[in-house]
Length: 107
Image (cartoon, rainbow, N blue to C red; front, side, top):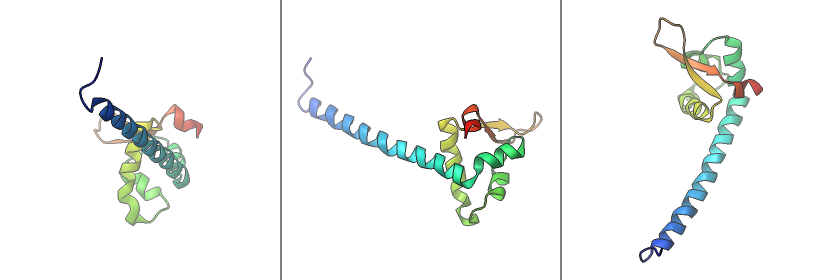
């Protein structure tokens, strides 16, 4: 089936853009994981022994506190990648924290 005028060109362009964006996001994913390991986020949460709130995590990180605004974005990416998950702090509370997954245990 033939595509309308320019349709084949548009499809090729769209596929090329998707290919480039896929590589860009893969870079972001691997750099996010590297950042989490270097900051010791995995160890902090594991040693805490229970889900860790954002405030507790930021307090435990050895980083410039001015950069703390980036931690929620970093954790969002790491949750999406499956290295962490959101979990309730306790059964009676609605507050959630970050907890480890089987993949993060390997790290």
